[in-house]
Length: 418
Image 1: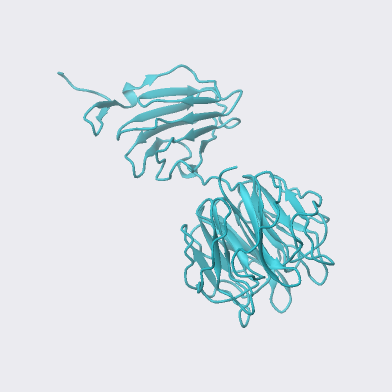
Image 2: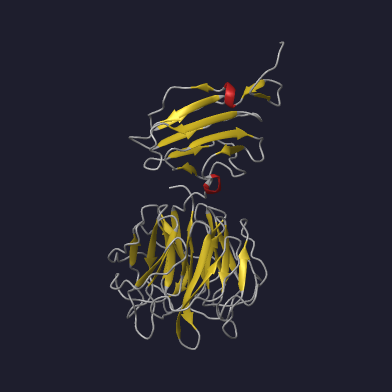
């Protein structure tokens, strides 16, 4: 070969790989799916449908692919990139990569196995990839005249299964959260006194045996996921109300106490919001409270925000709509059926009243990718009813007879498989 080679780079194999100037542009793609190859450019027309793009299953450093919005319709019908077993911006292919800006062009280059595909030119680099949504949920433990250790799984369409008994030490007034993208953890609670037990839940909903000694023993606390794959337990009651938190890694390891995170209180609720953050809300401190504390995507708890809806405690909370949240029910001397929606920036809305049967000491979790479910509790007696929440935050009427009636339980989402 003689003369300069323009617009090319060498692969690790020594073969010259096409770069921007040497790309081979393909015909306009109008289908809902397409499998692409390195060294090509693809105009993607999403006028009529979303398009899922499957990348090559193998690649070498320097491989490049370009996608452009042919009809300026990605804002209406997005593209979804399946990295097909390879990493995308350091995340594996369980993460969701979407581009939804009209008029956008995305150029990706393969950097090697560790980081994988990198968008060298796109409008929304910081938005991709995002964690896959939780599809199923689990309710566990509680009280129905005595402490129980049963659990109930919830499928991706919101149907609650029959009881599974004997899942760890019986206890009540505990908390639960999702972690590691597709697993969950129950933690703390009251046995014959404050407990520091935890139980991990697998991606198939199996509850593991007890892990002991994870931070200060306490009960009446709350927990939520944060940072896409981690979790946080916070607040509660030990020998007094506490303001400490315990972070949970993406492998389910509970860290030692972090103290002084907002006003100490108990009987509050917590949930994730905004895709990677969390919020603790309401509770009791010598009176019912309406304060909240936001949690950053690195697990840092902010100072108190007061006056967010009607004061109450013994409520529940869950995420919905992929990036928003909802607090619901509770008591302030009488059972309540109100909810408060939380925006994707952590702003709590005013009360919505009359959403299902009034009750307290219930639990809630996300399911189905973008919906939520409230279930169980106490309203003139132990109840086994549930209320589904749509992806727009609308709470449905009661569904009764979902497992053994009980209260003071916990719930969390698990599994990224429907």
